[in-house]
Length: 69
Image (cartoon, rainbow, N blue to C red; front, side, top):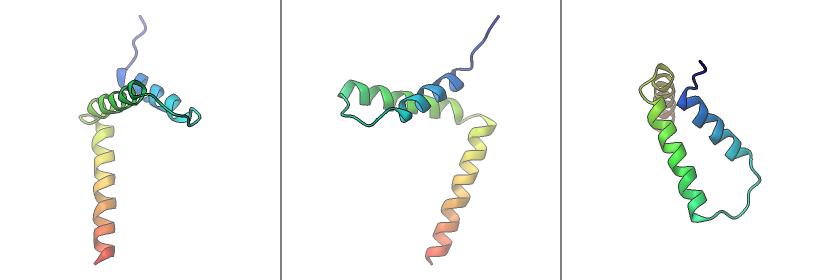
């Protein structure tokens, strides 16, 4: 039986949508994109990968904050 991780499927959808040529979008298209990205974030947040990304972003922000002082 083939199983598909929902987070991987949403990541593929986001990647394909980002690669599309830039053109005027409808409100429905924008809402769909925002929804997909929010759900992807919610699925990745509790994982090890999500925690490592959060740690990297925190270190980056702390480094920028220290450099600005």
